[in-house]
Length: 120
Ligand code: AMP
Image (cartoon, rainbow, N blue to C red; front, top):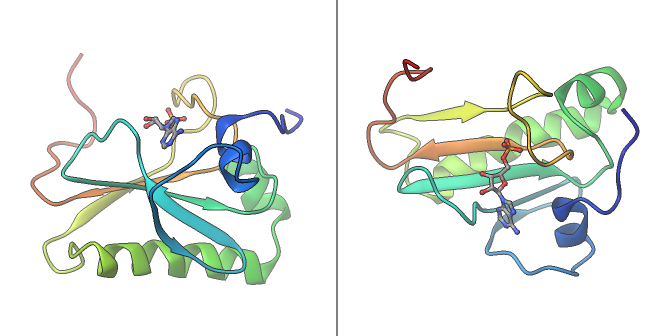
């Protein structure tokens, strides 16, 4: 799938849409999810144009992958959930129910998150 530079996270990265920034470095931006599903719900995104985890894992540089991994931990520290625990989720593609086609990790915590997959 080709990267669509009109997706909402690309607009946030370009400063066209505001966000509540939690953390930023050379390779990543971390901001509050606009529709939080837990007391802490932060999205961690790479600044590079990656559609999803498949794309990122196959083509990102080692430096970008390291920065992304560390950014998730920093968010947990900054939001005070590192000791109580949290969940990191990435939705990928159609069956994963990915809505925004720019790789993002959901960092969820601040209370019990429940089971991994809700019974349906
Ligand atoms: P996903 O289904 O994994 O693609 O989730 C996309 C997430 O992006 C959802 O949790 C939305 O609430 C969130 N989202 C959409 N637009 C914005 C925005 N402008 N700022 C922050 N979060 C957003």
